[in-house]
Length: 490
Image (cartoon, rainbow, N blue to C red; front, side, top):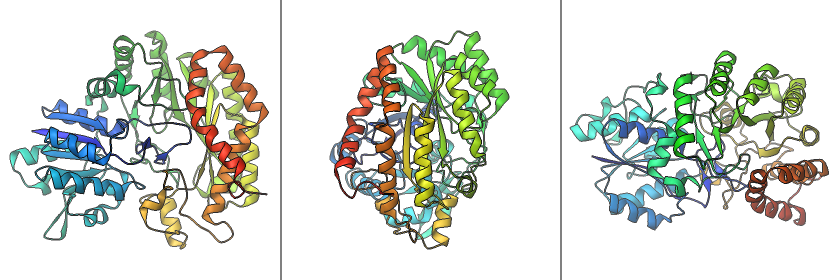
């Protein structure tokens, strides 16, 4: 039986796997890593599997349908996201029209939290996965192959005679060491040319996204990650063996991005993993997602083990706003962390959000000034984006703040970030303008430009990274600077 795992076409360089899915302003394109792990898991259990990324391959909808017609899969598992869900269902309809024999299951955070809504969108969608879907895809493939009842498949939802049917809840994978390595999956299904299509603006290219753990112990209200309040790490030995595999088989990879929701979530495990990197002479540079609560000792060990950059959420310069989103971070720690990182020699990618509960023009102006003072290696400025299933979405619904529930409006027509939360005195378009202003002020700040010039002169690899990111970013900055309505005043 053949199973196709498909990242369907949408807008050019649209990253479904990002925590805030969009077309970035920095040329970034995320790997479809959860889709890849599910594909590898099903393949490991004996099925004929194909993993395809229509976005990375720049396929149109027609080209994607033609690909599916050639492959003739009995089951097609498609990744989705909130902003692309309308498009994703339309792709499913186009596939079903030409390949009616394939069963189509949609996966991702939107079908997880809006399963019946998704199934009602089109009869072309045979089922959706609710939750972590590695086993759901595998067990569905087995059920279809063995002609067994679908309601026995864990984590599945489907319609029968217009009634919603759900299988038993899918259990989270506990032993992540059993999963195939993402690097092996990418190499087999994408090859070197395919891998080099991906780019993360904060890391050196070519880079590779893998996970050393799933889940996050924290519960920030705005976060869209799929497994909140859970944390399951791979064993240290399993991670080391994958890093050795990448060094041996893909020496052209410059950097690994550990896309764990929070890499340094557990102090003891982080120190053990870093010690193992050192002891096993892992030469690969790596970056990761983190929190400003990470202690200086841990940062020092990470640097010694090859860490180059940490991506952290500062979010806001106002303690009340941080408390409102359950960030659980003292404001002073933002500055202490940045000083620790600077002394340690770690680069930082800082993330900031505008339009959070409690935000005003005054608090957002403070956040811009804080970003410039912190002066991280790169910075992202987002408007508040809420997604079905997270507390920020429920907050916006309860208070009547959603400007629309047309999910195709969750990004701009070009796929850029926007917000659908509009508050009295702080309409959605004004929040976006504050993001534009922040980006313009930060990236044209002489202090920042001087630092980047020094890095580029000292390291050609950093210069390549900056060139790939800036050719897109500075087009946006120029647009903001020249459009009268693009940048917030205040």
